[in-house]
Amino acid sequence: MRLQRTTLSHRLLSLTAAVMLAAGALLPASILAPTKSILAPSSAHAATLVVNTLNFAFLTDGSCSLAEAYANTRFNSLFSLDCAAGSAVDLDTITFAVSGTILIGAGGFAHESFHGPLAVDGAGQTVVLDAQNLGQIFYNISGSLAVSNLTMANSGTLGLANEGTLALDNVTISNSADTGLSNSGTGTATVNNSRITGATALGVQGAGVRNVGTMTITNSLISGNNAPGQWGGGVWNAGVLSPSTLTISNTTVSNNTASVGAGIMSWPPSTLTVVDSTISGNAAAVNTRAGGVMESSRNGGG
Ligand SMILES: [Ca+2]
Image (cartoon, rainbow, N blue to C red; front, side, top):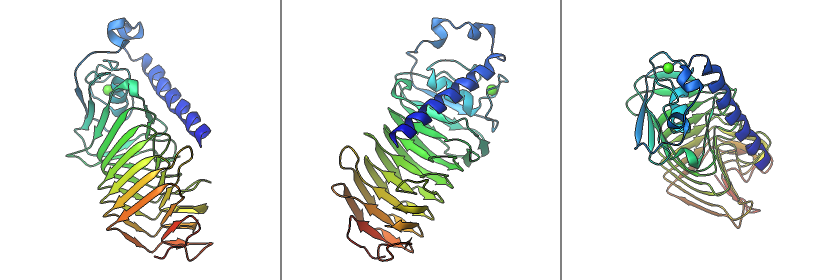
């Protein structure tokens, strides 16, 4: 898995670079020959970058696209003149002035600590970021990423991968080709009021949620995820380098499938705490007694 994520990171970074390269011909000469004032990390204060077009493309046309907002937060500068500048130090927030579906394709966004903290918030709009089964929309390699009030659909790989500090609020991650939400490394993820549905694990444990870090899930739904031939259809919780910790409260884990541990599968010495939650309708194909919650060799009902 580590190798897979490293490869993915490079892929996402390359894609971002490709977007920049493709956009080069459209950029003013002053940006094509960058000066320190343009591309060096900026000390600018916290910025709000307002996406006002559903066209994802990097195009200097007076409209701020999501690709351009990404670039400005990534380079902590005014890389695109169509959006506000980003900051390397203070929180950048990407908001939306339009509702609809933004076709991301393979143009996913890898966030790292040196980009500065980032929030992407669809509040006030109905925003769907659609990867069209091609790429991954967000990969938080390090640093702080908060995503709220939007849908991430049809990832071609992991729905959202986190190895830093991640906060999700009122987010839907649907129909991912691999695990919906993956938290690994030293990652800490906090999930509130969110839905993770329709993911299919590709040869790994954990279809809906895969936690090998520290994660809290509250007031959420994990449903309709499938781990064919694997363990943990709804949730997989296990530490690789150190025990993981997962707390689930006021959450429904339903109608997930796997070979074993269809609802939730936790592997000691990792810690799983489930409070005031509903575990129902999960189906294990191999160990049919382990449909709901399973911890190591112990069978669970539900
Ligand atoms: Ca533009």
